[in-house]
Length: 277
Length: 277
Image (cartoon, rainbow over all chains, first blue to last red; front, side, top):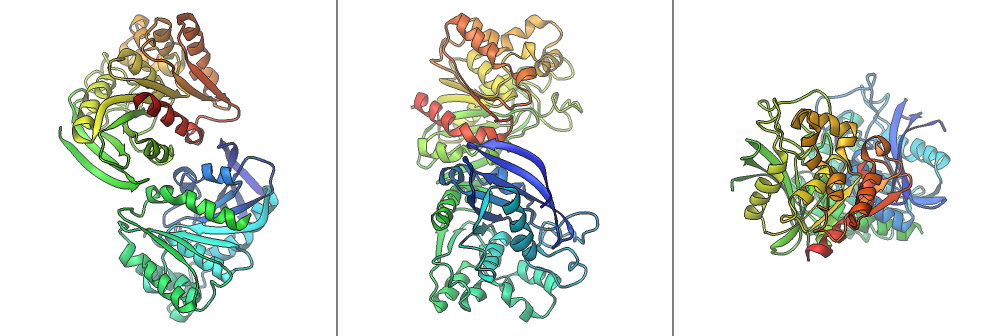
């Protein structure tokens, strides 16, 4: 795999690498970061999917995850949230187009040529990081908001690829949330049937979470998007119907920001490390 | 004191407040952040001074200090690095003017009307945060690079105001570093005698660090500014002459970024908490 290293930083005895590679799925260069803990590896790793407007550079600086990752010997890979560039379709809104790939493979114009984030994450990214860094094929997946939706749906759609899954403030059921309805209409078309395989609550209800012993979800109760977009109760209802264990922790006063995530990220690192050991 | 709260976030059981107030020293609105740990207080606190180009919003998101501050019951106050605004002098360079106040009171045109960062931090900021937040007059001070210079010099110039002092990658002797020579020429004038009272190494050599039992300094050996601008050996030489204890820790491979600071910030929080208890 052809990986161009853009920058490296030492932290907590490990190394954070910002890199770029050409993706066959998106037909664009894609940027990502890889934290490797102290030691030689190969390391199990967590893929982190960021939320709307983020790049590969938000989680790295703001989440405060690497101290606990170093302690647990866990690597963390964080990709960008969409293809980017002058030849890539975009929309002026923050919740569509570049920075808002929603971790699906678009089928509709003008998005289909490049917006293939499901294939990118589950194939190109994994192949590249496992060939270019000391990582082993032992993976967890987590993310925030749009990235929480991505983590839940990619885990359930590709259970052979992921051993553990968690999320912060995920869009629990994008078919029943304005962000999801807008993005899925654009990327997947107006036929709502095509949306259902990308809806975490519906996937849980259909039994697709069975490969996972638990799903850890943290949600702030001061989150401005809680009732309109996130709706964790839909995950709980689906899990109850399917007999699936999920753990939704609600936190009084916490909002949708990285300040919420940094408070609980060590719990997620430990959760994944225990399952990937 | 008239404090305008701009935003609050809950994290680690405490609260981060972004605020703004009118400073008599700078004759401008000044922005700052205050983290208060869980509980009622009043809390001892650490003033954090940021480096070149930073605002009141870099430390908050990137340093990863608040988890350990919450554990220790320590508050943290982080001001902006200069006055700002349309009526405030500026320079196109990153290392002069807005974002580069150097924590001195300027005496020279065009800077003198607003660039009074020493008076701002040691008088206006302290008075405001202690009246508007549950803080007590028990203070440590730390900072990074230009802010490390600020922490060291403000502590030694105002030992009645600060009980503990530390720094990350400080400009150890601005009279012998290009950043400092440029800024001091602009703010203090071309008479180098006027610079000496704002040079940490010279202050230590003159015995001004005596009120402090120790000074903790962390420095990355992969820091691109180490030899040209930072020169921690000048602090060590001065301390040896003065019989002053300082602790300079050098870290192989670490650079000048927040990734270096986040690795060791918990040590600084513990260092100050122990002395402010």
